[in-house]
Each structure stands twice: as C-alpha cells, then as structure tokens.
Length: 298
Image (tube, rainbow, N blue to C red; front, side, top):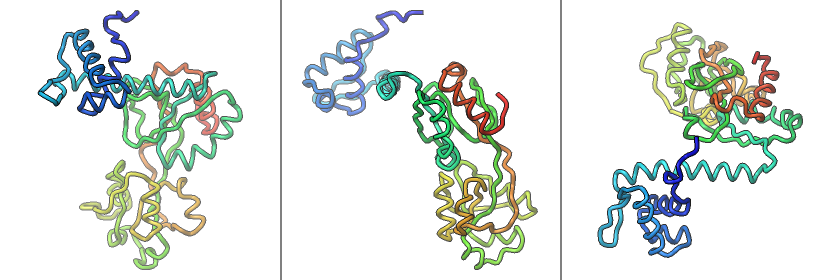
C-alpha cells in the first residue's frame, strides 16, 4: 500500500531537524547542513506546521526539544541512518549482491574470516559487509540481512541455521599453572578467575559440573574472548575459553589447560536471519555455503 505523501516530509526538512535535535542548536545545525540559521529555523517551522505539533521550545536565544520532538527525533535519526547505509551499500556494489552480516568478534576473526575467501571465490558477485555485535539486537532497528550469534535457538520472528557447538576449557599461562600446581577442580578457586560479561555464570557451571564449590565466584570481567585470552596469556588469571578459538595460542604454548577438564556449552553458534530476508539471493547463497561447511541440513 502506498504511503500518503502528507506523511512523508521532504528529506531536507528532516535532515535539518535531526541535526538541530542532536546538536541542540539551530546555529550549529545550520553550520553542519551548510545553510543559514534563519533557513534552518524556517525549515523546522515548516516541518512543525506539516506535523501539527511543536518540536522545539524556543526560549530567547536557546532551543530545546519537546517530549514529542525528542521521540520523533529518535525515529527520524534511525530512518536517516538506514537510508544512508542503504545508499553506501548500493554505491559499494551497484551491481547488487550485497550481504550485511553481524558477527561475534572472536568467532568472526578466528572461524569465519579464514573461510570467507572460499565463499567469495565461488560467489564473485557478492560483497559481504561485516559488523561486530556482542549483545543481542533488533533486526527491525539495524539493517542486517543476517547475524552470527551464540545462544539458544529462540530468536522470535527469525529463522536460523546451527553452525556448531562449543567446548570450553580452563586456560591460563604456563607460569600461572606452575605457580598454583592445580591438581583438582577446587584448586582453581585459589587463582584469579576471568569472566565474560556475555556468560556471567560460566565458571559457576564449570565448577558445579566438576564437583567443586561454585558459590561466590568473583573476578575480572571482559566483554570479548580475545581480551580475556590475552589477559590469561599475561598471567592475570584463568579464563574459560572455547578450545577451537584458542588453537593457535595452545599450539604456541602461550596458553595451557589449567586442568584437562572441558565443559560442553549448552548453547550453540547460529546464523540467524529475519523472515523477510529469507529469500535475499546473497543470503541464500551464504546460507547454503555455511551449511556445506558445517555439514548441517537446510
């Protein structure tokens, strides 16, 4: 259904409004959009008349958003960002074949990136744009065709392909292992334990699984596996790390297993995509390739 034109203000008005709302000043907005202050003021007044609502409170030489204006500014900023991203993607690959993918940082660099040349060689018309995301996000608010994330298969309004599971091991530097002489799981409690913010209960689960006290577990927090691994290499403590993501560090001897006691994670790595992007040709090709790489059914 076509959107009535009266609900689509000119982009020039929206750009000036978003700049003024973000900067809190008509003068600063004018400098950003390369107009005069009076021109920006007129544009915003024209937008208010079209909307039938006040967007700013004007007080002498200052302006501030009304509550309605603040809400509207957030929506307009999101819309302009999506338009800008779509334009950038089109210019980067005017022939089409663009795939916008969100990835987990360490999984993306250690597992996905080494495999991508094979996919791109077989699909030369496709361009992949990668953005790292750690926390869950909303496909409706961010312009991704798909995402690689870790968790359970419970993303509402989305489809998924399981890529692989994960086994974590307690890893530390050789010097730290030598200092503490770990012999049984409870011994690890004497050393600093390094935690990931995305898996705050991982150490409790590991300790309980191996029959060690699992209460009051504290330690440094990290938001990524890569930084936790570097901290462990530096001797700051023991980190629970996926074995397949630290193969190089283990092979070099930078990291060793504090104890040879792995734990299989309950969650898995998934490719997830919104229903409306399911038939996007680059995503279909990427999905089929990942399924072949991981031996999964699609």
